[in-house]
Length: 287
Image (cartoon, rainbow, N blue to C red):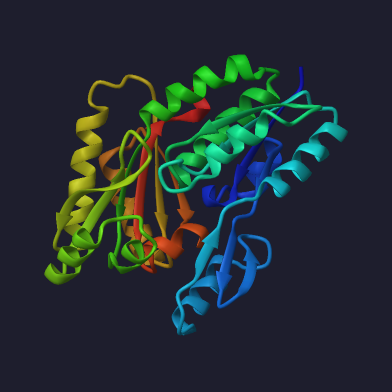
């Protein structure tokens, strides 16, 4: 049994790691004033942020299509794969997972296993990497999926946005929440709930106090965990703050593996520039 893994560009998975673990990354479409770009293919994060600052109209996104999925399936079939695990963006913020579940029933030539990450960015990447590592070691979907569920259950995230206006406009958080947050000039901390939806978690006045809240939350949620943990810091064009947060997290959690990510254009459409995220979970390298 030969098992493949597919994810999408919202994971912002490092291309070298994707190649190492034979993971296919499909790009989400970013749309600027009727012009379409393939996330991570013909638009980089830096190019996207420059356009975001200069464009009079805010961009939108379009999820991976079933046509893109079918092309990927056909390629995998030609390479001799028997089954594929699809780790994709949370069903709480896109209908992709539901669409893929329905479409997968009609796919022939390869068995398709849709897996709802219920998360984005580094959490989604960690799930894809675990699946890729296990598949490369010879495991099949029946063995991989329970481990993915174990890892998904351990994932926590805190997302600090500079302004809620982007999330409000794209419908990822209610108008009332956005209005209150911007009115008070706070740094809202958001998270993903059990259904993979973005919900408010806490409110802080500064990025420094937001980080302190996140550190306390990590300590509380991992106090009884004996397995190694991984912490990922993601930023949307906020490299200096990312470096400072990594240093602080290293000091507080010296035994944890710490990774850094940029927040992909597909996610920055919703968060806006200068957003910061911290994801922590069981270390996929040790599962």
